[in-house]
Length: 155
Image (cartoon, rainbow, N blue to C red; front, side, top):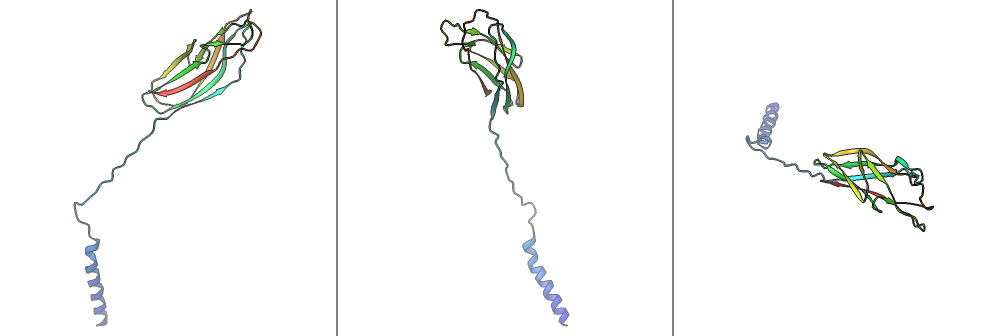
């Protein structure tokens, strides 16, 4: 008899607890997931430390390289700008500015700036920058310089 009472007590406890575990049919909920990826465009410029020869000319001398990263699916632009409007300048008495041409990834430009357009996102795209200076055997002695600035912008 003791066994029957214990079994009946356990069975009663199970039936009493059962409704707490029950799930109502047709009851549901949703969780909405969202995320945003920020526009990120960067360039890493490496100066090759090249020296250009004005007297005998320099042809297509690599002066640096650029690593482009831009996650704009519509593309982006790279602008190469010269501080001296595409000339090497000297502070030496009687020196004239020396014009040159810059080439970047198949596009050449002279003057103040030029732009290269990319049609989609790119990551770790490395391109060389080179300069061509025509020979000028009558250049005045002195140091000549210019600065090229590379800028990236998403579309």
